[in-house]
Amino acid sequence: MREQDTAAPSHVGAEVMETEQAPRPAEPPGDLTTAITAPGEQLLTLLDRHLPRIRAQAAPNDRDSTFPAATFHGFARDGVLGATVPAELGGMGVSRLHDVAVALLRVAEADASTALALHAQFSRGITLTYEWLHGPPPTRKLAERLLRAMARGEAVIGGAVKDHGRETTRLRPDGSGGWLLSGRKTLVTMAPIATHFVVSAQAPAAGGTTLLYAPIVARDTPGLSIVDGWTGLGMRASGTLDVAFDDCPVPAGNLLARGSVGAHSDAALAGQAVSSVAMLGIYVGVAQAARDLAVETMARRSATPPAASRTLVAETEARLYALRATASAALVNVDELSPRHDMDPDERGRRMMTPFQCAKVMVNQLAAAVVDDCLTVVGGATYAAEHPLARLSRDVRAGRFMQPYTYADGVDYLSAQALGLERDNNYVSLRATRPVDSR
Image (cartoon, rainbow, N blue to C red):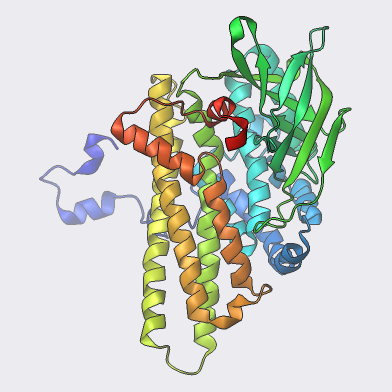
């Protein structure tokens, strides 16, 4: 905030200050209730059409681990899958991460699995937009082609980051200027309908250096296969599957450079924060849904709620406020720093990632605490697997396993920042240096 925004000159009276201020927002600052841009509002309006169906299908899809493909076909038809694609390329042009998080929050209140899958698409639009604006000419051309396809509802792009078991996903030259990709990725969300996958892979280089790349591989590429059988604890309808690659051909132009293993460059943290921070909205939405279920249940009961239940409800309200405010602060920080390419890249990366990680730790803790207290308020009925709160209890715990960072990696990162310890903060690079048994 500029200095002149923080206080009025001493000679200005209270009445004048009140009339000169902008109209008060409908919701408190940091509430994560409304969008702050016109494209963001347009996205919320489109999503509202789908929420009744998402809510109605959440329980059966969770029970059967069924991906809501019909809902995503509707998203494609209405332009939702191109929400974060620039308007110049045919998309909606939602560029503020605050608005993306609010949209995910709304969907997560109806079904967290659907929100998680939608986040994968929104995130890809954001990162490809950066490549389109700032990448070298071949990368810009690739990004534009994919973004235009996303805007038309034709491209659904999933991220494939985590290696399966002891396997390491690798690229090797094919002898004609292209590459061959082999390996297997796990926890690939939205896999049932993805048309493309952005894959984290390693490739050896001269001098013993291992380079990091992100090849973009079409679903119909020879050697690519989807491995079904997702039986997750939560987010069971998110379409989170394994994807295997057996000498998949990758043209040279379909490769995004991602640095080298062990480079200890914090510049990569900026892109990782931008691509992931809006996910905080999902867990705020889960906590809000649990709170609403608990309050509605108490309202239907004829007896006056006992003191213990009222205490838990009061604490839930306070935690929800803290959840929303914490997530909002991290989103504002990333939104403000994202265009600051005049800064030192490493410093920019840390200043985006550190508040995000502080917020992620607190959001994961507070959201789980809200859901747990709501289970207590509603009572033993929630112990049945088909109860909505049972599903929310399982879904909310997924946040601790999401990169960047998982809880353990986040502790390592935040403690190292506080104590001034040297470490490789790029979690993709760090994974590549760990013994295979510890992955």
